[in-house]
Structure formats: structure tokens, C-alpha cells
Image 1 (cartoon, rainbow, N blue to C red):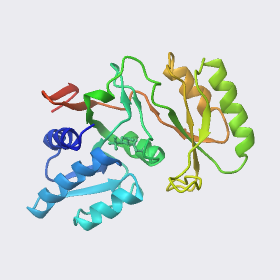
Image 2: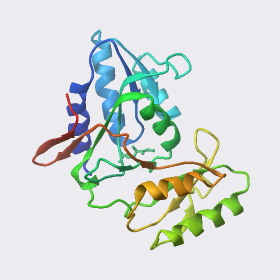
Image 3: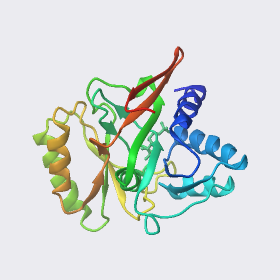
Image 4: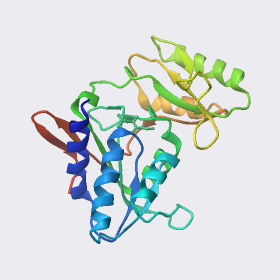
Length: 232
Ligand code: 5RP
């Protein structure tokens, strides 16, 4: 997706925020544009208090003087704006391509509205072409891998399971100190059942299926931005 389309989607989502709001800040290259737009508004006197979904987003927000807090200080947010790796017609999502899915889901679930910003290439008929990120505890990795592989077989996964690595080859570690496994399903036919099955595995901390969480989405294409769901 071109950076211009990411920017267009992020700009469109600015209509969801009002001065005085408590805002969740997503993670990734599209959310980064939203944080930039918000930072420009803050410089002009816009008031908000924000909870970032990753250390990277926190650093960006601090550099823009966006006031930050935590979900220990406040327990609900008005809105969260975040990217997605896939979005289907039910506004079910796959997230976690950037490795921030656990904090992203905690922040989204604490928000009255979760707004997705993406380009239309992220829209899919059924989820699963993008490998599903699964955040796992470091302890018992072999046992967790076996259990997740069994679930993948039960759900007809067409591909394999890989432990996420960084460019340099070292294992990717999340902000919460966990590993991520990427599960290639090809097509996920029953996302809710899969979600429940994965959460039943003791070593699974969380997964990137966001079901019944996304309120609305701003999806940019070269023809403009399409808004779906419960927009303002
Ligand atoms: C990070 C995410 C991102 O929102 C998702 O990967 C989309 O990223 P981008 O906007 O860079 O395409 O879930 O964990």
C-alpha cells in the first residue's frame, strides 16, 4: 500500500477525535500517520490524553508532545485508532503484523470505539491469507507449538507455523517479553471457534484475531476513502 493511501486513511480518521478525548494510539506504518496528525493538532492546542499500544508509538507520541497515560490511571478510552493486516465484511480483523497485538487488543477492548485505518487492499472476503500472529509465553515453547499445530490441523490450515524472527535472525520479542508464532491458515472459516481454541492453550498469551472489536474503518483507495461501520 502506498504511503499516500495510509496517510489518507489516517487523515480521514481524524474526524473521529474531539478535543478532550481519551485516545488509544495504534502501532504500525498507518497508525504512525495518525499519531503525526494528532501531534500537529496538539501543537495547535488540541487537548487529549492518550494510551500508546507499543513502545515505538509511545516514543513517537512523546516526540510530538502528545500527553500519555496508562490504563492503570484511566480504565476506559473514548476511541482507539489503529491499522490492520486484514479486515472482512463483519469488520473482523487480523492484527499483529507489527508484533503489538496484545497491547493493541487490551487498548481496543478498553475503548468505546475502535477505528481501523487501512487501504482497501486489506479488505478480504475471508480472513487467513495473512498469517495469524499468535503471541506465546517463552516458557514451554515446544509444548505450545505442538498444541497450536494440532489446532491448525483441526481448522484445515494450508500452511505452517513459524516462530517470528527479526531481520538479523534473532527471535522477535514483544514489548511484553513474549514470542510470536505466525500461523498460515490460508482461509479461516470459523474465526470465533479458532479464537476460543487458541485461547484454551495455556502458553498462548493472545492472538491477532480481533472479533467484534472494530466499530468502523476508513479504507483508502486511489478513488478516495470509504468509511464502513459506525463512523461519526
Ligand atoms: C501491529 C499491527 C498493525 O496495525 C498492522 O500490522 C498494520 O500495519 P501497517 O499499518 O504498517 O500495515 O497490527 O501489531
